[in-house]
Image (cartoon, rainbow, N blue to C red; front, top):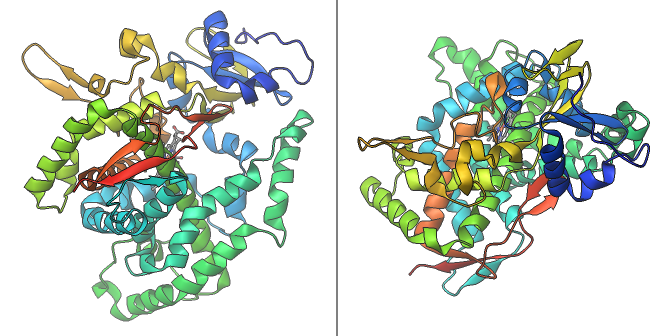
Length: 477
Ligand code: HEM
């Protein structure tokens, strides 16, 4: 009782062409005709797509559906970082992000703000005359990288431009090397993985440069902290950054700071950098384009920011960020509206899995979440699901009560951060960063698209990317 396999005409090629070059229309037609889940034949293998009804069964059954194995088939990120670190636990990484990044936003709030303001000043400046910014993603990744470096490596190391630059480019460098069309998958997917990994095992390995920079700038701090810890024992006061947490953690406790130890720290910390920067930058860039093309929302969002700015005297606490409800709704609506068409792949690991509607998939099946099916579902968003309406994230009741489902809230109608046990642990940090950035930016500039109109995202197969056009910034004063 397999999900219907969409028929295809050309053997071997199957649906590869439609999936690469027309994923949006192609998947929509498959969904309309075959319901969910349905399967297509791409790069010599079958992929099953789950829609708004069946996606939660994948996300909530993480014992059966493996996210990392699926990611590793296309972008063997784990294998790349495993080359450096000896201790490997995805659970450990997720817990570290929950407890020591998202869980400490109160402590990090002033530092995040300071770094974002620094980036805004450095890259956008006065803009007394309207100024066009092309390639906004690159600029945003540099701005976003600084607070991330601050939280991961501490305030002092985050002032080092080389480290911040390394944070902002490392993920793109890895992705660029992995973005080789998986032609070898027509034979077997492991051949593609092996091929992609070749440069990372050669002298061209871009990770070596990042590792060397990390060691150069972080080793003195690591040595100093380990020696202070030894000297002071229980009196040592742990610093508020991920690096110092790792140094205190039983898997990383050491007296010997050799190259292997530094490699281990590098592999662990840069795996988080990998998860944190591109995702946040892309969402932020898409939200800026959504904002810049929709003047009808500018006044109300600006007024909310001005009010919170005045009440907080310009220094935002996490409570102040929670008060940015209109901004939160706008950002969440951008997440929904500009979502990837499909993503969050998983491999099914059991002998077989049967969905509640009876469809059964075999062991090893690759399953993609058809995210747009959830994001644009009439069941969740009614007849206006095709429209950009931030207010839909607030429900008003007849007794005057209103309930706001924030952008960090995991829900069956909102899968941008996944779901179940493995839902993105960095989402609190990411949404906080995006909101604070927006808040500071809007207070200072008017932002609009170059054409003055709504500019749709670019599509790369099933992934949404920010448009290539520019954004215009103009100082409000
Ligand atoms: C807007 C920005 C972000 C988006 C859209 C995003 C999205 C996601 C998604 C879809 C997953 C897979 C969830 C699942 O399997 O159900 C994930 C996992 C993860 N994300 Fe994020 N993420 C973002 C920012 C961040 C940040 C800033 C960090 C770190 C500070 C982070 C760290 C992680 C980690 C460690 C995992 C693996 C969790 C696990 O295996 O349990 N993410 N993210």
